[in-house]
Image 1 (cartoon, rainbow, N blue to C red):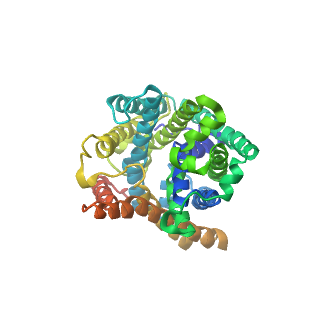
Image 2: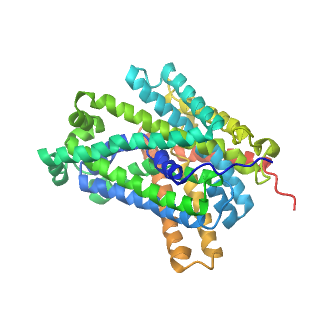
Image 3: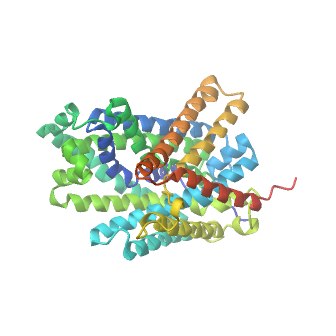
Length: 464
């Protein structure tokens, strides 16, 4: 039977981390962070650093695991090695049917939306929806026909998206230091922080940044195709995470040099781009967002197209012979990729109906953000893996066996709480004040449970 070849190097793996995490959020979360802190710039920087630390901690724990375990689809390997094949199957089932396609479909729409900005399309109009479908199919086509080309595109998109970030970090900071804008932003506060205190404002800002750091785990999905994965994947996770945190913090400072905090709170990063780069700044920002989103879309599609293969190669799941098949010409799990495209299409339809359809969502209480709420469950799934690691890996030192995974568990718990707070508690309180009921997290969990129950019927344990 044909198996996946080693076709990717360290550079591609690093770009998978950086390119998948950095999407549209970096360009627009600055406004949310400043609104949360009341324009307190130093507090906003702390928020970016704290959330980045949470990402680095979890990535470091998986990096340690990557030095020991190697099979197919990293995080699934770690789940299997620590918690057993049954738990690994459900992690893989969740990734391929909820997590990856949920985010991928939304990134296709976000990319199409910013194409629409250039042409004046309605963000919920048919033009944007059609473009989203095209971009989804285009990403699938590139990954399924030429995975090497997809790897090269990931490198190119990552480099291109970092150019405006680096330029804003350098030029924006220089301009801000020269005209005094940066000093003014660092020494003044526009209004009271959310909750009325610095601590509550910091928490609200951290919640706003959590989702901007999501997606790095996708890089582990290519470990079967990565040269020397036990060496290169840990390096990629650590270096990629550090690049992301540095890019976010320095870009945030650069934006602060491009416009005053009160303007940024009202108009967002567009005003800083216009001030620093002139009249073409707004258009430049839109182009940067498109390239950035396309890179993230491609990175997520890499994980989507390999999902069912990671299940079938373990002799689990439905139609194992079909999904474990690898094309001789492209060395790609083509049938697995087809399933990934199908599920992405279903989630794109759901996202449109739940969040963009006119006259309210199509699904009533089951309208929720399918790109961010899966964070509630993916980070919860990491926790048993970390606990089992501490129990089983008796040969590791105290730091690797207990300290790092313990901090990682705390980071996961906080991330889960942040997701619930942002999408569950706050919307519920707003709805209650208006005399209606809405708790998106609850109804997301119902959908999650239903899809996982379906997975129970398709699981086929190995014959021993």
